[in-house]
Length: 245
Picture 1: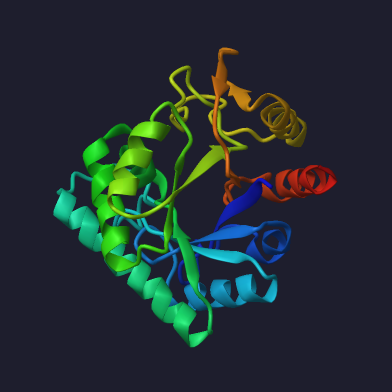
Picture 2: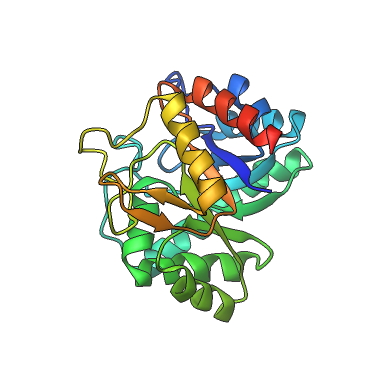
């Protein structure tokens, strides 16, 4: 059964983003920000409590230390820096989880860190190594792509497992990468368009790139962004569709 996940807990202090209270009951997995690209201790605690209330699986959503840029700017970090910042952020969320008698089940990097992980194997290795050192029971969520076998081998050597993700509300390039947000139509806002993509994915095991190229993808979970202005309507439509199959 394909799971629906969403980025959560990305508010910070008085700055609010997303519709977590409305979206959380509709998803299966919550990628909770860990304080580097967004969130703060109080927001993290509220989000963990909300996930528990709705019986939603909790995942750590670490990013680059870039609150101003919301973690969507690429930072030149060494492998050691990336490894340690991942461990630091998982540990912060786990401390909040522990006080709420909750557990982290997986890790999904955020924004620019996620994209760099998929384009630079050394960054992927640093993230996978951090998870392996911290807790081998944690799965690593990555973009499903032509690199699945390559990255699965790296993960297997480090003793961790991968979850393969497809994005419901992002356009894809012909090479299977996500279309840069700087390009027009990079983020989909139509529920009908997203459901058409979901239906094609379920029936064909593939999605279409922005030029119509068929991209065959393994999928464990589907993501919709919580900061998408149409997120709630999209998630409602996806939940309704998934509950029927």
